[in-house]
Structure formats: structure tokens, C-alpha cells
Length: 232
Length: 86
Image (cartoon, rainbow over all chains, first blue to last red; front, side, top):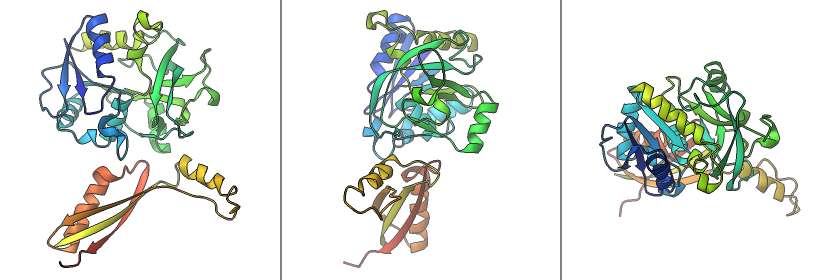
């Protein structure tokens, strides 16, 4: 079982993700350079956080056309597992692998702080080990993280249980006040219809190491690992 | 032939434009309360080589559709101008 973390120019959470997967979870992880065309037989591809291509034009818009994305799109379209965090989520939306788009935060500020999220479906691969109503404390760090989808897409997302996480308060109440960036319906993460491509704005890899004082989001990476084990 | 494309990319009407909203709000500080509904987009200018204006239009439209604008959140329009012969 092998995980591949794609590195774009401007990715800056790639090493955090690799550290958690490789050092803490003792998994086989390879770095995949954006100019390559070889996914090295990985079982799951992870697009990390950061500011690929300086977030020029729109976050993720230029990275979406990096050479390796051709292979990632092909892999995903064949049912391969792909997970995008923060900028990775933006890249997946730009690539059309996930529905919707990430807009500027409504306060037009870069927001870097801990927030709370709650899983909205427990049968997605990245949420399978999360307990019902469990509140996860996890950091966000983005300027363009306000999830948006038009009404028809939103309806479909809700009907198909494609909403993975919503922002909530510490007690798990999904309220306008607990929405940090103006995301539509407090959406923090979604999956595709085929349930093999996942994206979320919060950073689970930053809330998985006891040394950092918060392991609340490790359950997301544990779920992911569990899923890959079942999948292959 | 060389053409220049002048492209305007605007946030869709349905989408909140926080930048435009903030600028709208500041208009009263300028004592210009009659100005409102500011919306802020991007202007992109590029050059394209093509045999005809029609082909240049097609190429620019493709660039807009695929990269320069995201149809989920933005609309675009452009004008193609023939570069003056040097």
C-alpha cells in the first residue's frame, strides 16, 4: 500500500502530510513532482495544502494544468482514491473532480485558526471511523476557502450525502457564527458522486500529532488508511 | 496576424463579492453615497497569433473557458483587436 503526495511549486503542507503518514502512521509514502507523469503505482494520491503557483489567477487554477494532473484525473476517473486538503481541495474543484468552487472568504481576510467540524456522512472513506456527532477541532489556514456551489449542485450534494464536513461550534451546533469563511451551508468538505475523490479546507495533518497538542483530526487520516486497506 | 484580446472576468451576480461590497461601503466616506453596487473583477490582456480574427476569437474563448475564468463563479467577455502592422 502506497501513498503519493503531489508537490506543486508553492505547496507548503506537503512535508506535514508526509510526516504524519510516514513517521507517525508508518506508511509507505512517495513524493510526486508536479511535472512528472508517473503516479508510481500509488493506491491513494494526496494533494496537499499550500499556495501552488502563488495562488495566481484563482487558487488551484494553474496547478490544475500541471502535467501530473492529467494522470491524477485519469486515475480518479477510473475510481482511484484522491484526497485534497486546502489548496489540494481547490485544485480538485478547479479540475472538475469535485463539484463547486472555493471563493474568497467573505471577510476578505486570510484566516488561520482552529475551527470545529462535524462529519455529515459516516459512510465516506475519510469519515468511516468518526463517531456520530463527534466534534473535531482542526485548523484552517486559507484566504479562498468559502465553499460555493449553485442551488442545483447543492441539492444533489445533500441528496447524495456528498457533504463530508460542516463547520460547527465546540458543542457541534452548525450555526452561522461557527462558519469561519462564509461557506455555503457551512460546508467544509465534499466528495464526488463516485465517492472516491475527497476534499476539505481544514488541515487534518496539523491536528494529528500529540506533540502539537491536538490529535482531534487523526481520525480522518485513520479512516482514510482503513479505507485504503479495504479498497486494495 | 497578431491580435490583442482585452478580457473582462467578473464574479457572477449570484455570488457575494466581498471586495466590491467593502468598496461600496467606503463610498459614503468619500461623500459619494450615490455610488453603490460596486463589483470587482479582473482585466486580462493578451496577444494571440492567428490566421483570422475568427480563429483568434476561438482560441481566446477556449483560454477563458478552461483557465482564465471559472464558470462556476465567474463570467467573462472579451474584445479582439487587430494589432497595427509594424
